[in-house]
Every structure is written in C-alpha cells, then in structure tokens.
Image (cartoon, rainbow, N blue to C red):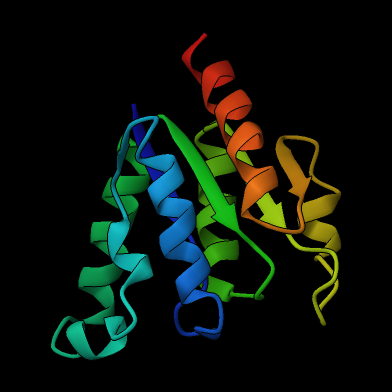
Length: 139
C-alpha cells in the first residue's frame, strides 16, 4: 500500500518530531511516499528545488497513493490544498487532530463528510486508529 503523509512544512515545523513518529507507525502498513515531511531541515534541503517542482512531485505522489493521512493540528495551506485534491480524486483520507492544540480545527476539514477526522492525545492512541483506517482502505 502506498501512503501519502501530509503535515505542515512552511506553515510551521513545531510537530516535525511527531511527524517522524507517525511515519514510523505508517511504515508498518505500507510505503510512505512522503517520508521527507519528517526531516527537521527539509526547507534547507529543498532550497534549490522550485515551488513548481515541489508541487508537481507531491501531486504525482498524491495521485499514486492508495490512502492519505494528514496531521492537521498545525494549520497549513499546503496540506489544505492536498486534502482538496485528494477529495476530488476520491482518495480515502484520515485527518489527525489534537484537540488540546491552540488552534481550532478548520470547519472545512471537520465539516467535510468525505474526510475521516480522528482526534487523539498521543501516539499510544494512534496505532489502532491508523491500523483500522488502513485496513479499511485495503478492503
């Protein structure tokens, strides 16, 4: 199974360590096409990559994906764009949100009936949520 993981990059990197832990959990279920999202120095690594190249590369991965998992606690225009495209392409999508965060979850995410939103408070609760979602995607 090919999994597209989305998390904030230019919108804020406060959750980069969490992204790495989520990706580790996802890799138990398939290939994560976007492991780079968990790189702490990603913006430096991609300094010589044009915005168009990033856009085209990421959309190719998104189109290829069998499932999309997005950590949406840190608001991100890019993640919102990816979610919109994934909805249009009828991809199964799981959005992960920590309700104790400073920011409220967007009504555009919570109110979309084609997105599955899972609230969580730590990694221990995520393993079963991810497993159930990805098992459903295989059916």
